[in-house]
Image 1 (cartoon, rainbow, N blue to C red):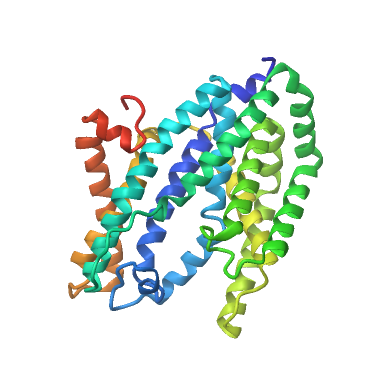
Image 2: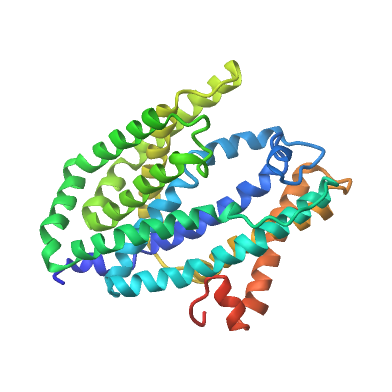
Length: 358
């Protein structure tokens, strides 16, 4: 392959962003227990709710899942820089299939049992994808797009690579992304845009983001120059969209049209990618450790959240303190299990996506 050396460099900001997004998701799920809709979706709910959490939850909800697909698409390209398409497919299958099966048959039912106990309801064992639903999407996108990406990475794909780089330099790819995100919103018109795990919306928005991530990685320095140049503009526009939609929902009790939420989602992704490129392309001891740890922590966090909620919520403590204790407890227990069980018992570690000695 005759590829620009800059494309072969490890992009530390992508690793760091993956860590931060998964940790934000852990916090987001913890906050649900202090929101009005927790009980409706079977998550243990504290008696005292926290009204202020609607702000961070609303800020995160528009881009928390789409950016995971973007990062996954970027990761496929970087993997192809040192692995064949077949090796990438096998590696990702080993990395994802174990956690998905573990979650489906053990973690999600265990959470369901704890939730039923919390609400004093009868429990029935029901395997389900639950909070790991997005792993199915990622496996499908990897199977579909890895062969195409491998072709683009080969000598025969040089023209495509140059076209994608030019597309970032001239703004064609961001414009196309805006059109496609808007079209998806108009055609599907989901009842709740931010409920990403339902219906055709789940598959289309996931595919668009995964493919966009692939184009980001292929774009190399052209992509990075673009997001660095416009990151603050994207941030300002995304915040303006969010503030408008938040105030609209507060005053009128209804969401703004899905197309506006889709545009906010894309602008937020652009801002986050730009800020990460500017600040996070460096190694630190924290990110070096968290890079290997965060996926097992994410797999563990929901059952631990349910168990800790069962123990914490009946206590006579301020709700904000309970939230802090809940998030801290989830992270500490998850890391302890990773360190003392998953890293030491190879077969168990494989079920959590650990494919080699960390």
